Image 1 (cartoon, rainbow, N blue to C red):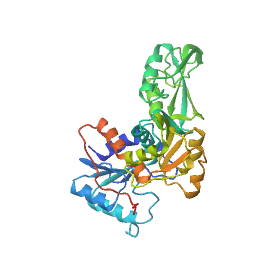
Image 2: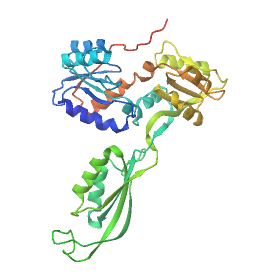
Image 3: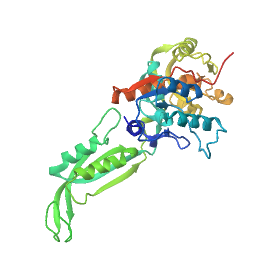
Image 4: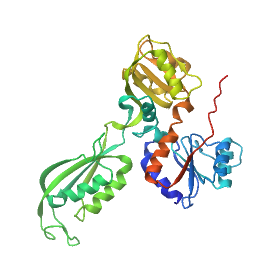
Length: 364
């Protein structure tokens, strides 16, 4: 397939509009028209990973962490990023990275961590804000099903585990077309009234163009009337971190041992034990220090994340254990998520996991 085909799929399945403002998810290196035969999935792009891609004939690397994080002003090989970009170009290996976009989707990194812990009743810890839109349009009764189906097929109308969610109300619309019109009903230059249905539904902002196109292509009017509103509602399906419950309470020390084994952590850091069993758990893959207060507010007995600062370990008080399992350890499951997404869409595409341990942190 062409590089642009898999990039288009990933851009949609892991919406680029979901990424944090500081991030740089998406295609990092490569020509969209390039033919791609196989891909290597990894957490980080390193010299060793590029060598591995070359040895295995992989012409695409799909990583979690971006190869280019901040803007490059030159390609002179003076920095590590510049050297890696130049090496990728020389080897004709494309690079695509899905970073914070993969963190916030409903089946993202934190949710994968929750699955590994067998948590129940899992919900987003810090929902994504300002990314929901509402569509309101007015359709003749005879064409309601056609328009509604088209808009739903474009991705609108999903709320939690429900899809095709919408609302309708009957009314009467009025209009008058000039001499250049070809009205669906009525006559040119004559005031007309039509029994219409007000139809409204919601959609994620990244679907805006697709939803509007579906509406206009299915609507019978020459000039379809519609409104789009920005909603303040939280996106209950997308956001940073997760919260859930263990099947039964677990002793704190036993829970710490389980974490070490499940995430293959050589060492974990944690705050003062509370003396209570762990039942409610909050977690966030990667550097989740900023969500400590969200974890506390959720009533969690333990909060699992990485890159916790010294003073932040005090913030749990005697209410919650704060546990740092390591950045690499918390996010290496991203490769599994990427693999499952791609293989479901392209079942015959050659994918392989990188065997390089890219963790830059070592322990004595």
